[in-house]
Amino acid sequence: GHPQDAEDFVNVTQRNRIEFIDHNVDDLLNKSVKTQFDAFSQGFHMICGGKILDSFHPDELQCLVEGNEDYDFEEFEKNTIYMGVYHHRRKIINF
Image (cartoon, rainbow, N blue to C red; front, side):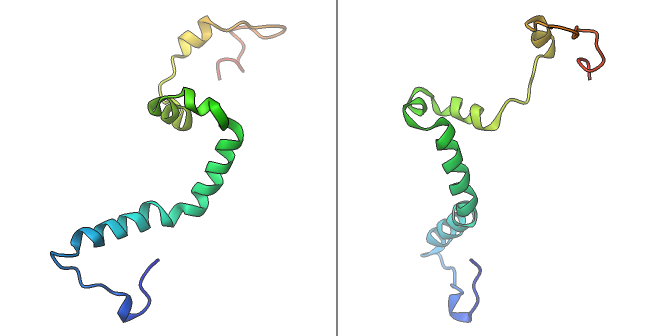
């Protein structure tokens, strides 16, 4: 958290600057989001946990979590089978 008292403040020197930076980075990137990350991690492992995770490379897991920003909708359309009252020209399909 943030310092509350004067004794919580640290004078940054050449000697302790790396430790100071490491501590602040840890606070910002880890401790400040621990509750949210723990909830995400629990849900993720509930759905994708176990040995299945061992079959992914880190970049594949990153794609799984982040999703994809570039979709080829023409490719989707070529590989879509419309059934019943739906067809490729329906307004709802082209929305």
